[in-house]
Image 1 (cartoon, rainbow, N blue to C red):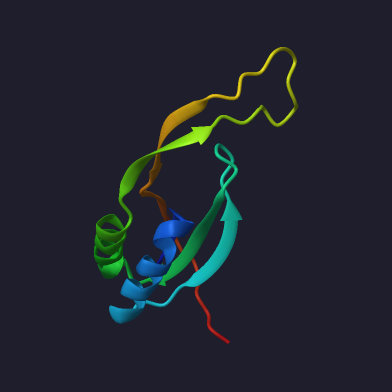
Image 2: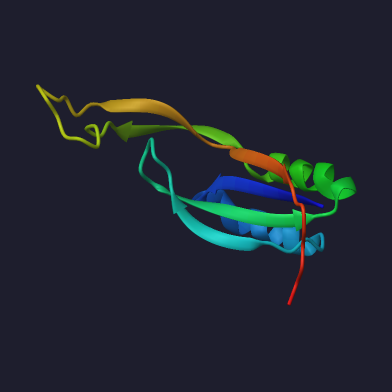
Length: 109
């Protein structure tokens, strides 16, 4: 048994959840916030048999695409120590961060 932890942009999450459901995969959705852009994202917890891991990752790769976006840079979390310029910066967003971990025990009650 494996646990897939997939962190995806909110923009991609609904399409991904629909596709996973269509393919018969269940998941738990967590609303999370990214540390770099401080924007909303979605973390999906997917408990799956080991032989189906590649199928789930394939779905994630097909649905969650990267794209470029201009953002106004944000000051560091601790505040600024000098001058801070608020200029648009191009960043790549989207895609997914995927972790696959072993599950020692799974029990549904």
